Length: 65
Image 1 (tube, one colour):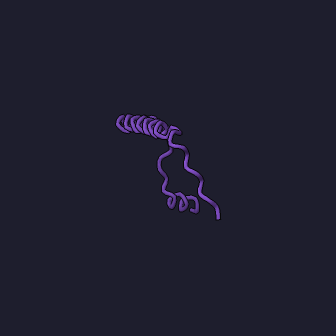
Image 2 (image 1 turned 90 degrees about the vertical axis):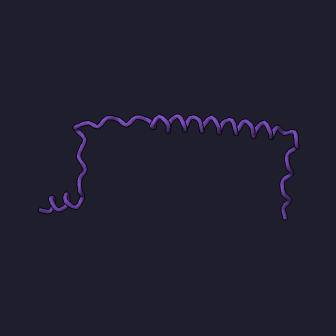
C-alpha cells in the first residue's frame, strides 16, 4: 500500500497562488466579454469570385448525364 503525499506547509503561499489565478480568470473573462460584446472579429467581406453553394446530388446527376 502506498501512503498519500504529505500536504504542503501552511505558509507555502497557497493564498497568493489562488489570488493570482482568480485575477487571471477575471482578466480572461473581461477580454471575452469585450470580444463578445463587440460582435467578435469582423467577418471578411464576401467577394464575387466565391463559388455559390452547390447541391451535391444535382452536381452528381449533372456529371452522370
